[in-house]
Image (cartoon, rainbow over all chains, first blue to last red; front, side, top):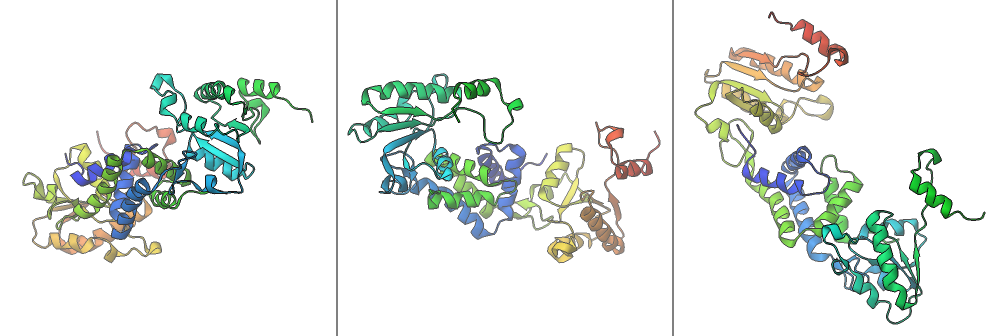
Length: 199
Length: 199
């Protein structure tokens, strides 16, 4: 039985390493590369290496950055008194899209997950603590996901931050906008009731 | 509002050019590249350029090949008297998987589609005709998809092959194995009735 040529096989295997890409999708992608122009294929190839080479981490907030200090940390208009702690750079983008938060960020690059061997040393936790030393920061918003790992990480951080005498907050739980009460799960409804506010 | 860094933006745009990849998937893929090891990213990048550089077309059947003549055309065990004409290299693999056809292939690299400006000159049609000149080929199976374009291409080719005095056949239409009669569409059922065979 005929298979792929070695170079094609290699490309299919590489595409399969991407998140959410199964065998059939990887084959389609590999064939689409074969049908690209030479320039497009080269540009694609260079974009991969280029992103790896150019993108590092901001030395302050650990977010991705092509400069030593990222655009947010370097912006004098941002409020230095509030730090929003998130799991990943994607979360920074999600919050920036809302256009409501004007403080700084801190990217943990993961969540505590003892089962997977991810402890505090695997995350950018000490970088966060080093930002609290000079007493300028007044509030740390822990904006990890409302999942088991996200909660555990939030609990861990809130305890760790106690000695620094900063206000530690957590994003509100409740009903998602546009959602329907009858389809909300029990934990969400419970949290929505518990967190009710006067109108 | 903060966006991606330029190198990341570029990578996201490249991933979006792949089939079936929307914006959110492209972002996930780009971030997964950032989290790859340097070697993996380099290997990925090289696999793209490598596939483009190494993979050409077999000078006989137009299928993808890393050598001048592909493995099937070079195999003396294959039956030179039958050529199976398909739309793309993926179809060759699909038929090879069945392990039942032992003839040669011919890849058209597309189907006739006048609306999209794809005429016979855009396909590997003249390469097919040049294989029929010496009278060795006895049968041409036209294995294009059972779609409008596939049918039109089959009709066109069958007329074109008339002067060569070869038997021209088409894959059978009918019920797919494991399918259910009540869910079969009308055209399929009509073709299944029309093509009924004595048992």
